[in-house]
Length: 250
Image (cartoon, rainbow, N blue to C red):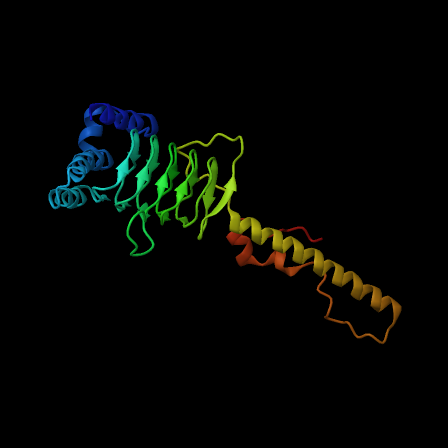
């Protein structure tokens, strides 16, 4: 138990620049307090006591805002940052060196018995508000972006973003465990690619219209040529992408 507590303290000091001392961490970090109480309730759960572990779990939730079922298996060196609203289900398994932010749910997807909650390997980061649901496997060194909903297995060394979660491989790249918001914007990239494709197609149509006008005057094409794609100058789309309107007259 003491070894586990030391590992939990060490990861807090390592990954939270606001942590200023051991006493402050012990007294003020609800994530650490929830883990310490959970380790007691988990030992009681393993002895087969039917009610006391659940009561201790509910007391922990009231004190810290973090709900961990006494049956959940949690490794060493776990950091629940801020922690309010974190829910960890009965059959969840969490490896060593894990970082969870506030609002994370490791939950189930149905009423089936047996294994129904996720298993997270070592050195996994789960961003604020992310939901990992079902009896799925999350590989080592994986990073789950804030607000993502993950319902399928994820291999090791991946980054997951979106709803439902989509995997973006980070082969060979080291992941900063604190930069859980530094993730690629998959939706914006898709929209940008579509806009570029629309621009190219509208440019081709414009060229075809100009060619037809030059071949025959009987085609009344006034107003049908779009010229450059106006989609690229749509203010709402550009604001979504975080870009500005071009002032280039061309």
